[in-house]
Image 1: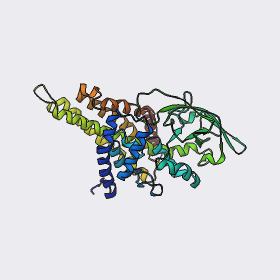
Image 2: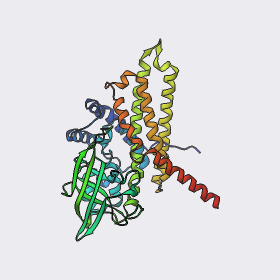
Image 3: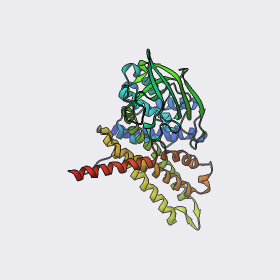
Image 4: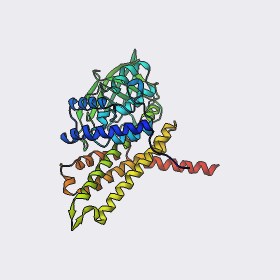
Length: 397
C-alpha cells in the first residue's frame, strides 16, 4: 500500500505562501541585520507583514487567531518559515513563545487563556519559560529543581535562581517551575506559576553571553526573591508541574527540529549554488567528487531528519507520548543539521567563513541545539534505557 506523506491542500497552500513570504520579505530584512533581531521595531515589522500575508500563527487554534494546524501540518510550515532565522519570529512560532502557547492552550483556565494566551498568540506580548537553574539546580535533569514555592495566605511565595531563560528580556510574564512538595529529587512536587514581569519579586540579573544570538530577548539570569503570586497564578494543578512539562517539551523539541531543518535546507541551497558556479582546478566545484559527496550527504541528512520529524509528529497527533520518537528525532536532527551547515560552509570556502553569506551565523546558531532541550548524551541515555526496558518486558512474556 502506498504511503502518502504529502501535506493536505490547505497546508500545502500555506507552505507555498510562507515560502514566498520568507523569500520576498523576511530574508532581505534578515540579511540587512546579519541574522540578529535586536529591537521591537524589527519584530513588529515582521509580524505585521506576516499577518498581512496571512501566514501568522499557524500553530494556534482559530479561536486565538491562528490556523489550527496539527503537528504534521506544523512540520511543513515551520520548516518553510525556518528557512530564515527571522522566519519563526515573523510567524510568531519562535521559542519559547511557541511552546508556551501550546502549554497554555492545553492546561490553562479560561481566565488564564484570555489574560496570557490571547495576547501572546496575537504577538501583543512575549513570554519566557523559567525552569533551568545554575548547577547544582535543574538543567538536563529537571528533578534537580531547587526553586521553591511555599504557601502563604492568599497565594504563594517563590524563591529561586534561574538562568538561561530565553526571551526573558522584554517578556510580559514568565512560566516559572518551582518545587512545592518534597525535598529530594523526585518526579512529584513541582508546580508551574504564571508570574507577571512587573512583579517586584522577579528580577532580571544579566544577559548571558552565548554563542548564539538569534533567539529574540536573549538568554538571561533571573532571580525570584520572595516573589508573591496569588492562587490563580497556578498553571494547572499543584504538584503536577513535571507532568505538564512533558506536554510542552515533546512538541517543543519537534518544533525546534522543524525550524532548524529550514536553516539546513537554506545552507544546502547556498552551497549548491556556489558549487554550480565556482570554478577551480579546471572544472566546477560541483563536478569534484569530494564536493559531490558533501552535497549528497547533506541531502541524506535533510531527508532523514524530515522523516524522523514526520514519524514523531504522527505519534503526537495520535495522542501518544512519543517519548522515544521525539528523543530519537531531536538527537539525530540536532547533529545532522550541524553537519549540513558545516559541510555547506566548507563547500563555500572563504565565502562561507565571511559575512557575505550567513553560513557562519547559521553555524553559531545551530551548534547549541545539541544542548538545548536536552543534550544528545542525555537523550541517548534515555533512548537506550527504553530499549533495554522493552527487551526485559519481552523476555518476561
